[in-house]
Figure 1 (cartoon, rainbow, N blue to C red):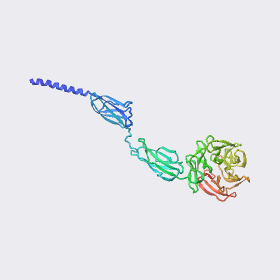
Figure 2 (spheres, rainbow, N blue to C red; figure 1 turned 30 degrees about the vertical axis):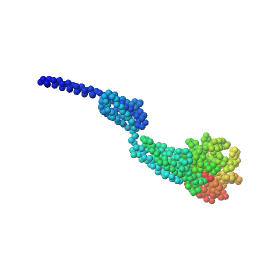
Figure 3 (spheres, helix red, strand yellow; figure 1 turned 90 degrees about the vertical axis):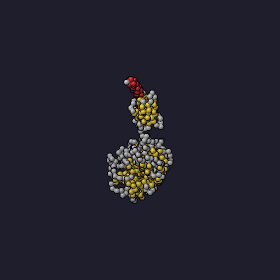
Figure 4 (cartoon, rainbow, N blue to C red; figure 1 turned 135 degrees about the horizontal axis):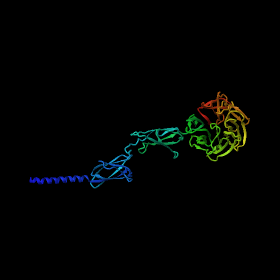
Length: 496
């Protein structure tokens, strides 16, 4: 028993010491510090949520991307960095007593694991294709492993100048492009973007547009609710010169300058434009004083001074403008408050034929003036019905025009029996050349052929809404020998 007396106190001492040491270890702690930056850029990222497993405090990074978690119990931890728009990151940290452990996070954008779309495969035009029309359907294909929404950019360059045609934010893999130039070599490339990765480029393909042929005949067709100008070559092939997205009409060709002048609607006005014979370099000529009259579908203009200028009407006033676009000047004003509707300047610039009428298109008359605005010759006046279609012969001896011999007048300017006439300045007589014209139709917009042995014109039903046909007839001794249809669904011919 004596020995047991000493054993129990010793056991109590050992047990007491052991319990005291366990309590002290549990209270020991350290801290976790760290920095969050962007992977690759190493720019600090602010407001990143920092938490741990096992759980301690949750903190956020400051403007320097730094954070501190204080009083962290001694243990091993998994530290988490999380922010919207970035991939969540984890780092291990072992906290020791009275020590500071530091971790660094390099965060990646949430799209870091997203694969790029495949490079676009170009389909048409094929590489090195020849003889391509100037209206081209560009097609391509591309795929994305994550089925992300793809957008495309089409870029077109050429071998003549630094012009770049670019279409962005395309959602389809087909793009119709109009207005390319004839005889050019073009290079095209497509880029694709999934909005997550850098755009991916296709190969570069090239193609050559067809050479523009010799054309002598131009006219207008209606497309997409607009007037569009076309040309025909000697083999009957048709070429579109202006876009169906613009209202372009009344083409007039000039051989001296190898230009075509025409009218185009710009906003709520109508202006004179010029272009090359192949439709390229379309340039607005008039600006402050537009073309205007009682009916813009009937209004006409004329080349003058060997292609150096253009003469056009603005209601009762007649203006001349340099083909370069400057030097606009008033050359004549109709004295009877009538509107000037049609104009034709003679080839030698010695006279101008004018058709004038009231605001409804009637009380019309045709006469000639010189380039200074002096009256020269009266051709026709004082008749009921519509007049139109002025064209002087190259020798100034004859004037081609149309007259509705029915004398009918209406608010919608409908014509019932418009026929072609040739006025002879030597005899002061007009001869009807609309022989064999079908009943119920009108002959309109006549033009002498280059050799003046033929006349081209438009024939259409007098209902005012039917299809128009461009026709041709021979002129022999004041009469016609035949009427031949040239083109359907066409109007406003010019044959130079």
